[in-house]
Amino acid sequence: MANKLIRGSLIILIGNIIFRLGGYVYRFLMAILLGPTAYGILGITLPFQGIFQTLSAGGLPPAIAKYVAEYEAVDEHDMARQTIYTALKIMVFLGLFFGVLMIFVVAPYLAYSYLGKPQALIPLQIVGLITPFSVIVGAFRGAFQGVYKMEYIVYTRAVEQLGMILCATAFVLIGLSTVGALWGTVLGYSLSVVAALYIFRVHMPKYIPKPSDNFVFSRRDQLSLAATLVKFSIPVIITAIAEMLIYNICTIVMGRFLTFNDIGFFAAADPIARLPLIISISIATTILPASSEAFKLKDTASLQKYVSEAYKFSLLFVVPMCVGLALFASPTLRVLYFKNPAYVAGASALAILSIGMTFYSIFAISTSIIQGIGNPRIPMYILVGGAVVTGLLNWIMVPTMGIAGGALATSIACLLMMIPCVYFVFRLTKTKSPTSSIVKIIVASLIMGVFAYFIPKNTLWLFPGIFACIIVYFFALILVRFFQKDDIESLRHLTSRFGPVAKVADRLLNFVERLEFRR
Image 1 (cartoon, rainbow, N blue to C red):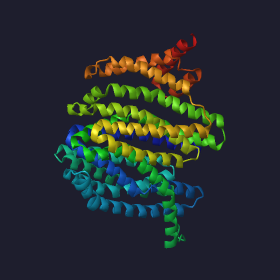
Image 2 (cartoon, one colour):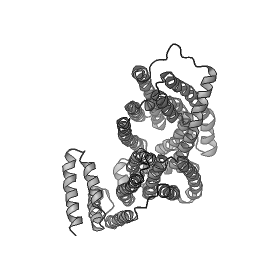
Image 3 (tube, one colour):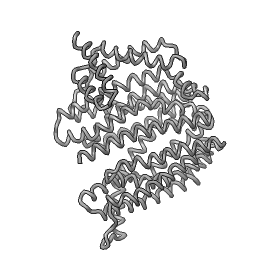
Image 4 (cartoon, rainbow, N blue to C red):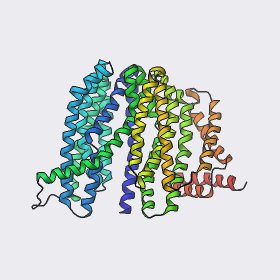
């Protein structure tokens, strides 16, 4: 079981990193090919696409994974298969219901009444066509997760993302603009459904055999199972919607008050600001099972060590990344969107959001720790409260401050969510805050920031400036005596698995060791 868990977690972790980067590739391609106005129209549809996909899924994929795993553990293969079929029926109904609702009710209301932008009507209606495909593939992924075949999830996501990128790019290049980008998304999800169905029919019978001849499952039994699945899924969907709103509510509010051009500038900056989350979410994914195991075994010392190191090593990389992005916002946008220099207008939003992502990184890790020690409702309440605060702040700040106001409102909300979440982590785990290490990281990042401030902010100096900042940050950490012997050993053990890089890393760590411990 332990090997299965480690293997599955590693596959999902690698897949998440790869596909998050793939999502950035899609956004960058669309931004470059469409231009600010058309990309702004696409940007206003993305939040509603995510919200309706989440509503249509009904929080059921995790429920499928949970109950399939439980039934398979006691060899009740018929019930495992029935769980998938029952959930799939619910999700197909929800997908069709919300798809029709989006096309005929929500999209016209948003385009004409809320946004006051009729150009958004057809793109928003296409979102309704994406919904049924996304929920069907979500159901199959829940089944794959339930039998620990995480690679099947990765395969379907690969088909989805490659299909979406290739089809959207092709449609935009032949002149279909925003509508073409969204039709590419529809095709990406439909191809993913085909791949998931093929895997389920061809490969899944090895893990969930065909139903036995004497298996009888009445309509009442189906209703009882459906009620069980829905009951489990309610907290899941509330949490998912709240988290999605925190990510996207600023764009939704901007649609009300700003032009598509402004939304395009913000949509171009937003994914770049979230790049540091790759590190924190990766650590959060790892800390959840680790903290859960330590808590279950009542191993307080290990739990406290996991908590302390999760914060310390996350901030070690996230803080300088966020500071660097804030300082080099303009040249970063110029380089990434070299075909459309107008996107540099999003630099203020990128700089502010980058700082906000430091707070969200700590919040994400804290959430995983709290969930791991058996308190999932605490993050749910904080997320719901955070979504409300984010909406209110955006409604106040966006009309007067534009996209910078949206970025500032989101950053403040992230800070307000982070504070109670960190408080509960230290209270529930009885862990002392690694204050000394955090202060040293902040000081080293400030030293790097002061150095970076005097570097010319143009495309010529961007990459040399980043390289110089990395060196300055590294020596600043040594100057403030951040590295301890345990940290060096942990980093040496971690880098030993990376082949040729291990030799370079080992020499670097030996250099740090000589400097640190000879003083």
